Amino acid sequence: MPSRYNDAPGAYTQQAPGISGICASFLANSVGSSPARLIAGVVGALLILTVTTAAHAQIQYSRSAENVVIRFQEVLGEFADGDRGPSIEIYGDGTARVHYPVFMKRAGDYTTQLDAADMDRLIAIVAGGGLLNFDATAVTHAKARAANARAATAARTDQRPTRHIVLDASTTIVELDLGGVHRTIRWSGLRSDARHYPGVSEIQGLAQTQRELLTFMERDDLTRVTP
Image 1: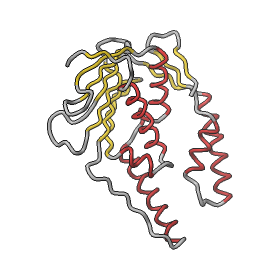
Image 2: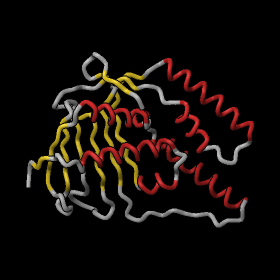
Image 3: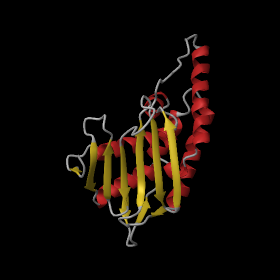
Image 4: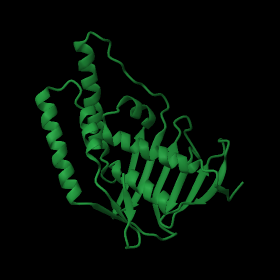
């Protein structure tokens, strides 16, 4: 997604998504639909593109070294108490603080500095993935609809429906302070859901953000601040 910093400190301009992305998202959710519904959906996608192109979303955030704009933690399901998983905090000035619990190979606390390109890409992923408007209840309903549609398809084709059960699933926690929005997202079993529900765009957006943050946590330029 193209993006740029504008002249105002802490301002990020999110460009509208491309038509290919909008149509691909619709088609992924329209397998088996009638030709009329497909045509109507593509026309709707074109209208959405027109509206979003006319109104670029501007995301303001503090550049302060004291303000956490994104916080991420992976709470591992098999650990019930104590320090339960790795985390990263990203501050407005690009400072990133990474923590690995004692039971992990890289146990300890680390820091690194993200440059403007890193921040630009990360905020583009967060905004483009819909995290600033993430509604866990609505996404749960979308997931249920996708599962029901899959079961109905299996029934029509005399196939056995598949059920996905994840034991001790990790919980992904993302906290945001961007664009005047303060939001905390908690989602259990994200990796499994991202594999099994490719048509639920909110889950895919959250999973993409998770992958990007984990990439930052594995950078070679991390500096250890505690043993």
